[in-house]
Amino acid sequence: MASLAGVFKEKERTNWLKAWLALDIAKLGFENFVTSESQNFHDHIYDQVRSTCTSCTTKNVRKIFFICPMQICNKVREKIITEHRYNSGSWNNTDAQKWQTNRGYCEIAKFYIQTDGYAAKTSFQEIDFNGVVSYMLNCKRFESLLSFPITTGNPTTHMPACLLYKAREIHKAVRHSADMKLSDRDLQDYFKTLKELLRDPGKILSLSLSHDSHAQNAVKKLEKVVC
Image 1 (cartoon, rainbow, N blue to C red):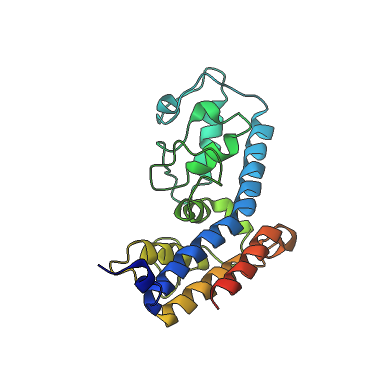
Image 2: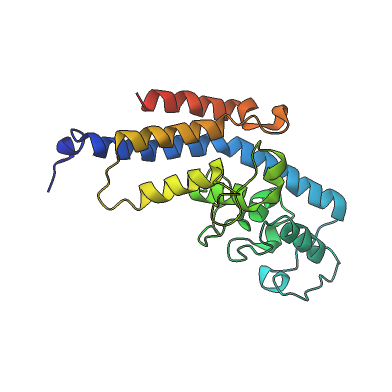
């Protein structure tokens, strides 16, 4: 069994650890961006609905022919589903009774995270890298905030992998690495992808990641780690 000191002497293992750290830094860089957009989406929904309801549960709301007694939650439900890239999210991650609360923006956002296990999370600070990227991949509202077309399904010649898709694949590769090793080349490619994503100019500069101070601080931290 290798000692901890020995692990840090192995370049490829150190690279793997740097990749994990890079994912954590990048996730912190995304937090303000996704929180702001999810709050805007939440406000947009309830500005149109113009009322709230606290009686409907997720179990009821997820039913196809569900009608809220106050004619509110079914409208919120339809707006949430309409913005999903595949019109089908995770009902296990969201609590409909909390949609109208001041943390409702996160409850709605969690619907777009394809993997279950986020039901207890109440903010993006508690959601991991995979959850944050999954939200951006599946919620169509990010199409108007990012400069590139978001990949749908598996990449093809006509639809190459976008930066979000590449970022998700990086997370998979690092998380599921059997030997916990990473080559210098792969590490550099991972850092390049994450920095490009954090520097994305978007379609509206003032709303973009490149204009977000948290994202740009993350870029600076990444540049220090890769050295």
